[in-house]
Image 1 (cartoon, one colour):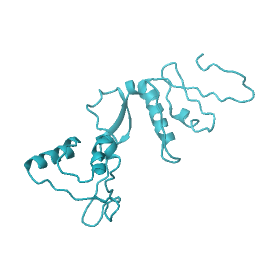
Image 2 (cartoon, rainbow, N blue to C red):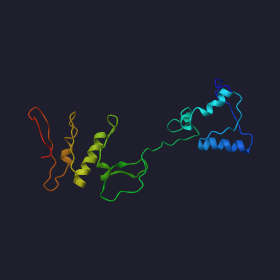
Image 3 (tube, rainbow, N blue to C red):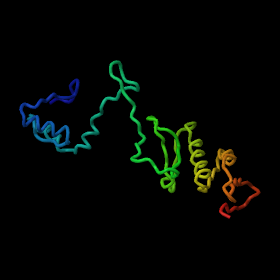
Image 4 (cartoon, rainbow, N blue to C red):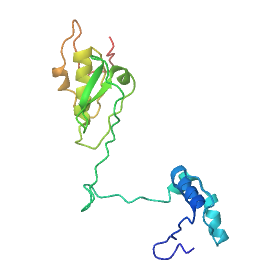
Length: 185
């Protein structure tokens, strides 16, 4: 078997039903069975030096360019998971729509933990966080604290927050004149 020749592979076909069954097991279950004789003992050892996961890293499937090639269309895969069930009314924050047209929502329970909004400049991180925070306060009365030492992106957010009973949103700007503060008082 010559792996350095043009093409770098050898075509092997099963010669009978047993070999065909073993070949199917190789392709569907990742189980290597001895279904074709290999003349070179060094090459024969290759099937025992790695598991199917390691072997898969050696193979790269061709990827079509976006939109496909003439005669072969491709459809981009959506990375957003489909929700197993719709959240109960009033217990979620709507942050947008999926490419399939359904709502993308985060439940209050999901938001009651750390949240990271990451992305490239200009891709909507600030708008997303404003949307989440505005809905948390205006629709659910959930208080929040934003520490923004670099920019003043959250100054405009305060104007869009409603007064809830005796609770009004506060904006505290630190500067040389303020030595310390306690936002929880």
